[in-house]
Image (cartoon, rainbow, N blue to C red; front, side, top):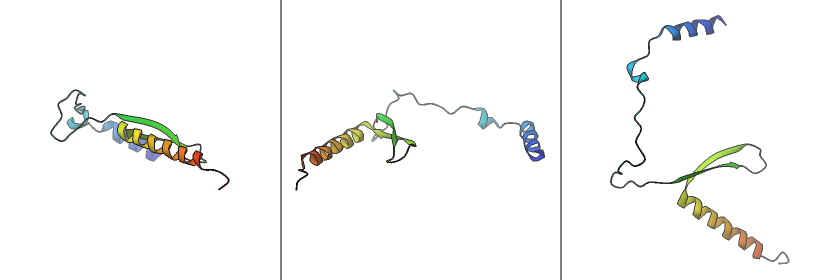
Length: 86
């Protein structure tokens, strides 16, 4: 407890530096792109692993997500087309 009080008093007495008070500059979305750069639309989803209640936030670019969904759809169709009697 005393240690926590000592740290709190030390932090309260410290003066902030000028760099810490300045907010980082934000780049507007409509800023011009440099050569070789491209804008990417991101899509984020909360996904759960199999047999788990813990969800993880995964972000994908829109093209990657469309390709992933197409591959998943194709795999599902292949599984459904297979006869269970083979």
